[in-house]
Image 1 (spheres, helix red, strand yellow):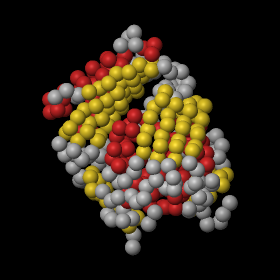
Image 2 (cartoon, one colour; image 1 turned 90 degrees about the vertical axis):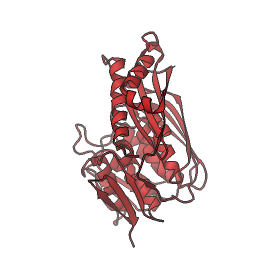
Image 3 (tube, one colour; image 1 turned 30 degrees about the horizontal axis):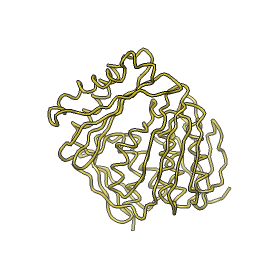
Image 4 (cartoon, helix red, strand yellow; image 1 turned 90 degrees about the horizontal axis):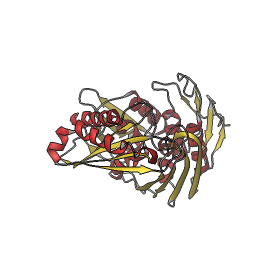
Length: 352
């Protein structure tokens, strides 16, 4: 396609689809063409899965890119972006692939459009294994990104669960004039525990949503003592597949930390809620304002914001996902990240 493409090794460190999503997002806004090799090389089934392919096609449509290798199971992808000038984009996910992961790829380029970008996703799952839930994006990621200057509205019209998916999600992304540098090092005083325990309509008889919520609260007794009573809403929804999940978050003065649980066949609702509650408790007790899942998702935004001034965050854990996203971001942007492993502080500054 072009001779001077930036080559990205898709098998680096964590070696998952995140490398593809971050690479395409940053390629689309920097104009740097890239070639991604060894895509998901270490996975049981290497190459692009449906959710990765839909993300590739969506970003390509958004920036009118020339793409080679955009097909299922492809382990090599070449991507040459042009201008971002699409205002409305519709994505169809025929499987139970993650809606959240597709949004991850689109959120940065959509914010660099000249006008509001309306995204509609039909199909896929709003909650799934090893993938960011849509509720996490709405209630945890977006509030933190607002500090950086990012603005978006997100709505779940219909929930989708494995194996049929069938979700419907809409997102409106506003143009960002400038990403703002941030320093997020302390949680600050806890303000509220919130959550949504959701389940398909046929599980209402078994009170699955209520049982998930009750178990989560029991696991969060220490936090509830600090703030009084937590508000975990319960809802039953019409879906294509039977399923459930619970999304939890704690709002503090300076941040939001989150965790989730996913219902599975033969897994009691109490276990789902308890696991989610314990995960959130662990994140909160770490004292870090940025949870382990947010740590990797926020990296490219920090890179963009640090073009103006140094950024710094403190995270609950330095994961391989985080290290991988740092590596990819440094490939595309003139920035350098610094990790203090002991204090778990990540700093980013522009390269002179």
